[in-house]
Length: 170
Image (cartoon, rainbow, N blue to C red; front, side, top):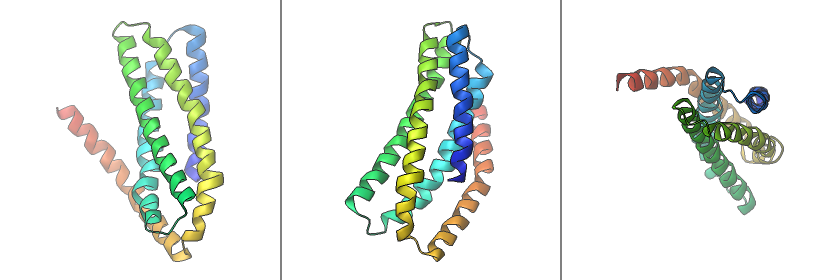
């Protein structure tokens, strides 16, 4: 949940940028690239990666209620929506800088979707799902998961830059 606080701070910056773009009709491509990088690497791959690859897999082994399984499925679908929205943002930015100035509205609407979607997602995790899941995890389970999270984080920087080198090499 600590990671959610940094994501929320970034969302406030994205919200300000969306309003600025609406007011000026000009896209700051550096901001967009940095926002995309943040969402893809920190919010999605790092944060959601720990949830999907570690926590949700562990919880799938537990005898959760149908409602709890439904909420976990919703969270996964919301992660997919976030990825799709960022992909659409990147596509719209590319179209805009290729000369399609009508893509400006798509850029802004994708930013605004991220700003409206993520706080609800975070609230569902923080106030509904995560507290309910603690009943399924012993203190030993929690310590083991925290250790796996740290290892996951430690490997992220290597994964990010290995992918960068691979992309640049193509």
